[in-house]
Length: 112
Image (cartoon, rainbow, N blue to C red; front, top):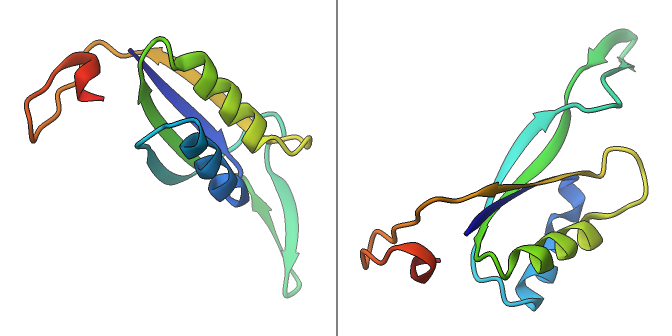
């Protein structure tokens, strides 16, 4: 089993969610986060006052998948989140040792 974590631009969330649903993914976790990568911060002016924007808003998507689903999920995330501009995001794949479904006590891949 794998835990796939994607950091994407917020306006791409619906497109990514729909693309994952089309390949049969049944559940995911979404959180609003802030961060920066290679583009770092930048300076903006608001009502005559200059300030630094250090962090950019992003959406973090977490999906637990079987080993067989991993490649399809990653490629779907990359295609759906792509804009061609810097800061499109990242996809991380981590090993997932155990999953237990609380309501049924199912464990392992059956709990996904």
